[in-house]
Length: 344
Image (cartoon, rainbow, N blue to C red; front, top):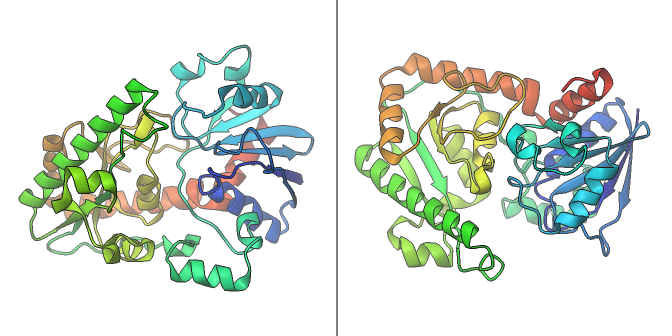
């Protein structure tokens, strides 16, 4: 199989990292021949988390954007029009119908997304050995094995984790979108309320807070965590020693990065309702519990804490889902299989 990747994104590089890693790992195993074209200079797609590929003569696009918000809609639509298939991270049959022409018929659900890379990835290859070592030391380089730590037993007092961030609705780029500003304010308020509630309800078992930024310093300075807890590797270590992880679905209703990381680590998960279709039988009750309010989140956590067997079963279901659908090379394999079989 011949695969050409047309690397156009700059700002969205972290979002496409997992797909790049998947193609790189498959090329290393001899399952495909990979070529990368650097098209970032002057590209109208530089601010989008999109990856255009040519796979055995077909144009296949991987859309890793949050929801249906694009920085340059005209450039994105032009790409979708010339594509044969578009694998979309945020996939809603209802919202897909809003695309013009035959674009909606080209869309396929891609699934969860998070930052993960591997040695030899195009994003890694352009760094010097010294630069890669520095990035690792700064806890920003994460490989598949950094997440994989399937839960095998549950403590008598299981631990709960909720690490999050706030979004500044007064950012210049957001001020022109009143609806987006309102969404950001509501997201911030919900996260602050949930953190206070969980701290009060589970003082001995709960670890949580927000990362430091100007918005957090203004709204909830008491919830800001020190860098030693929010640095990537420190966070991964804490996640792997936690039984239950609380996640939010992120902005624009997208499936937030931490949800995917919790699946990769094989944790039990309590999250807001998922708005988008995920492939592979990722199911409520089996892979996660949902909450629609801070009070309901507390209730779901109490139910899990009273049932250690349910915690372990959920973690094991997530570990299995990761191996079949979310590990970087598996996510790409599943997409390639759909291309071969014509499945939707």
